[in-house]
Length: 320
Image 1 (cartoon, one colour):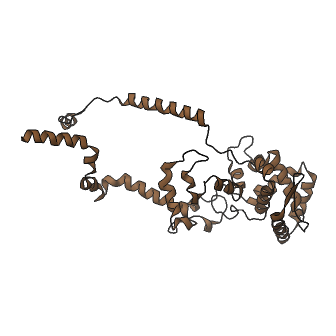
Image 2: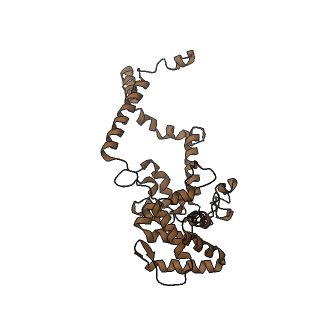
Image 3: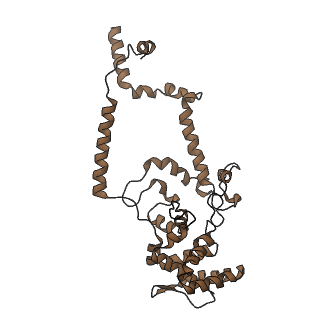
């Protein structure tokens, strides 16, 4: 230490403290607790929602999701950056939309990338799907929408017969065959591979499309059952009987109050609020009035009450 530092601490009582030893002890205790708890309770992670599981357990939900995506009803269709060029849909705050600064980084046309392209791969193995796909693409957009609208409506009363989704007779064009092809892809476990295939083969580390495929209905339904939706304080919850991320409570709290609870720009608004709080804490020592609050409130006397108690006793003895 410098002479100035030594002079400053000359009358300050000190005691030896081995920070490295204390840190290692804490690390060891935490490691033992984590290993024991993990061995007894297992992992709290909910199994991944896979196309294979949805197709086998909830075939109608799988087909309904596929048909809605093909009809252009996916929320990704006009999401905005980074998926689509719809700049007006990007979240903004005071007219500022950070997503638009970076533009479309991962272009997605949901109906093409999620349905048509996987079916095109399947068409080489299934002649019926290939014929149905040709008929669908040869039709006008109005005809395609008419087929899809009628088919999606019929799914309300659909049944599963011999592992196939059956709907009431109607004019659906080639749509039922296309949906049977998607269902076959899902059941075979090849859906995710068909969605993520790209020019980057043989290696691919971007699983965005397979994660987005079920987000509108299936994933939302699973999240609701697990109390993980935004309106259920989902960010700070955990699956099953495990404790959640309680330290995120201040963050998720703002999603429950207006205007964030009903705003299309909630993510950006809450993020800005939390950044504001962080900057307030970071700059507190330099902000007028705020940097004087500890002295005015006297909170330091509570934290160091043993020191001030000893000091007062010493002063009384000296005064006596």
